Length: 172
Image (cartoon, rainbow, N blue to C red; front, side):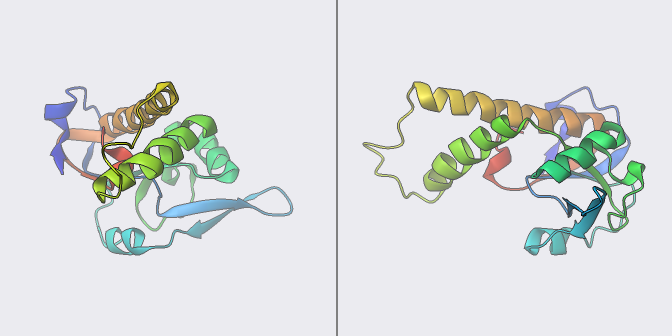
């Protein structure tokens, strides 16, 4: 947990508590008639953090599918709650990150490198290899984390507490 005003002095929002995670509390699909369908996210993080009973808290997450990206684009600044979506009483800001940037950051850095480094599963004398290909993946990881940092700064009140989930957002 960090103090956002120390890390990014441009806090302009009103949220005293923010959650940042790759996966959000909701996801979208597309019905046969083309309308968006919303479903509650799964997993322990969603279950645990859904207990935050503060309507001023904001959950910032990535759009993971085409339907998610459409919902994020159609919502004001990606704020699903402001677009009328029933997101469980929480404010949710879903980021429409370019799918290639997302894939490079998520698969190319977070899951292919950082997961192994954090779990000490690399043969460190020979891997990972930080070559030109990795530098391309790293640039995407930096852009992915910058998108989260900018969204958090825009939503955060001065002195806000920020809960950052997992190594996918290590730079945030």
